[in-house]
Length: 81
Image (cartoon, rainbow, N blue to C red; front, side, top):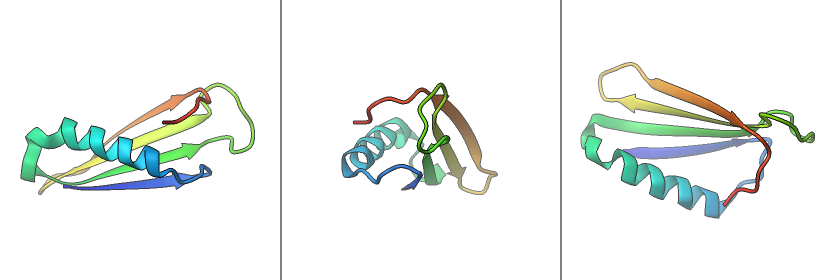
């Protein structure tokens, strides 16, 4: 399983990349070869403004031989790991 992380209007963070890779690797380990790729899209929706639902995280899982499955969540501005 390949984990790919992209950032939109957010600074790249090695610490956050490590956290995401470790967390998703553990959570999805039981699916083994059934998942080909996991894409994580992290973004700052309002870029330079702060406010409710300012940060966006979308995770797309690609099961082998099936259509991708995606979930999305928005949250307030918070400090990242």
